[in-house]
Amino acid sequence: MFLRVDKLQIELPAPKKQDPNAGAALQELLGGKYGEMSTLGNYMFQSFNFRSKSKLRPFYELVAAITAEELGHVELVSNGVAMLNNGPDTAADDSGDGGDISMSPFEAMQEIRSAASFFSHGGGAVPVNSNSMSWNVDMVTTTGNVVFDLLHNFHLECGARLHKLRVYESLDSGDATGREICGYLLVRGGVHAHAYALALKKLTGVSIEQMLPTPNIPTGKIPECQKYLAEGAHRRLYTFSPGDYRAMAGIWEGEMALPDDPPGELQVVEGMPDGGRIHDLVGQPSAFTPDYAPEEFYEIAQRLTQKAHQGGGSL
Image 1 (tube, one colour):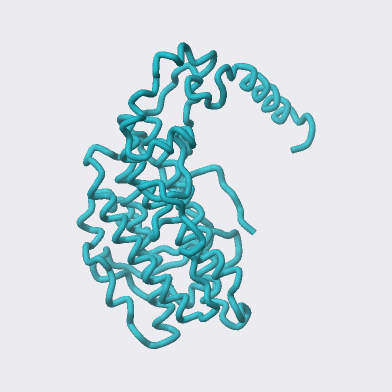
Image 2 (tube, rainbow, N blue to C red; image 1 turned 120 degrees about the vertical axis):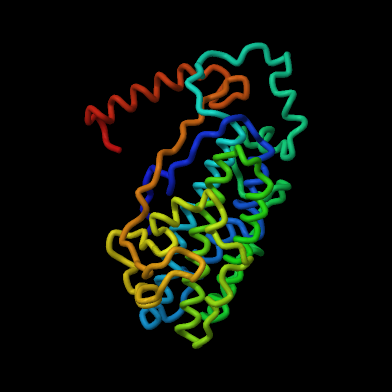
């Protein structure tokens, strides 16, 4: 089962401007061939289909625990896309109607890279790549062969690193939201690549971790990675569980950080990162989100919230 916590894995800085083209670039990290939907889909179904779980517990648990983290990565990137598409945090009035819609309030949306992100999705994120091509199940590999699947996962993490670096380079240096996501995911993707490499070494004796990082750009050269390296995020695997998935420590603990990263022993941490707040996307009546005249919705939601806090009814 999955436990849901109402936070993002990290605190994201609010965007300084509305930038739907940057949002479209970030979509590559969500619905691209090596995006978070692919890593989630691969690891999730591999964990569901894993053979001889009881006898291969450390390897099963590694894939299962990383699955839970990848679900949070899908959430993180999706929130980043929506934040960039919608612009800075605002306390603007989101009640009442949307004004005179005949005045073309969204004329600028004709010029953005992925118009569907607004026309079909209201500025939100969906599982597509930077060209709005749909993510699909053909990107999931689950063969039942442990070595093959782990090798595929290693390849997937290296491919994801390549795409994150390219997306990072495409974002303006002032785009703190997009670059923060890239920096964090580059560090955590390095952890996952390292973990799959160590699992393969335990099974085959081949030191695949010596190929890392691939591509050969150390995270120490990327400013947005520095605070995550300083706090040791490159050395941690999280269980994302209050008590399960401890056996994967046999793969991870006792090993050392990669040579280009800050030194230290690898560790398994029970639970999950502290996380950060989810930004509140303000309603936009002129775009009919949540609707053209939403004040009745807000009154109903307020009454239900008060009732819940007063203990009325069951939730």
